[in-house]
Image (cartoon, rainbow, N blue to C red; front, side, top):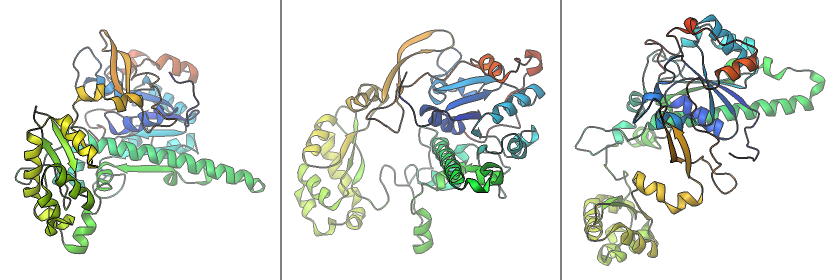
Length: 430
């Protein structure tokens, strides 16, 4: 547990959402000191509790994504649940949600109601395609949004169908953008307050004079992924270029790929800088390629990428990965091993920056001691901030939060099988 003052200490966030995107945004805010109150459906909670469940009732995925938060169980479709949520809104700075557009409105806690309750509330909304436009009402997980963004078309080998990466990258990027948007709006609100204080003679109420639309962060999963597609669209618009999948390579950049080493492990080598390329060829005993006039630029090297990969691959194949990395480091060539989870937990660099943190964790049935979890990023103060606590048990803080609000715990029967989502009210991300 950290005793230092964190940048978002004193900020309160109400998280209404399941799965990964909105909870990632909430986790980032909580990591840096915000009090994040996560509302979950009674009985089952966030579905992430069961994703990749290896033992017990709560997955390591849930414990990771929802660290440093409080869990409160409320049925948002009940009068008691609605009243509790609105009381939380009254006392919060940010509302974070990831339901299909129109769901909050159907429950009677839409933007106009939130604005009436708290005229300074910042609303952060994550959905498949955003709150406006012809596709806004369509449900869709990040896997679908990755397809709409152009991202999925570039992942995999050119002679095979597109594949997905091994993590929920669309949700994670959308969550990061949502967290950035929330902090951006907090900064703007504070700046306006400071300006308003300097101009106190006007008596202006900054919060209520700014429409909620201007305090709403609208994150679409497809747009979040589209935003990281670099020059994909400009290259097409300017030159008619349609990029295709290149496997482990990057279009127009060579040599840069993953190579299999002796012993079964692999290495990434980035020898695509003009000067770096010459050093790489010398290191692998192919100065003939390093001196070849046709290979002095990336354009020329890309044309002969298969030849270069074959030469580098042959050199790597008879050497262990540690030797490959050591030789190339001495030569000034960027290279590194392709890590597995086993490699990550013992990595000296990650350990030195407190990026691997050991905590006891409950599966819901037993306590596992000294389980490794990823640290908090970005680093401030030279090392990762210690994780305060892992994702909470379902409803762990319900009594505490409702008592603070001056409300009684809603009757279990009233909650029924309700919650933060139903079959036609799924969060729009995966």
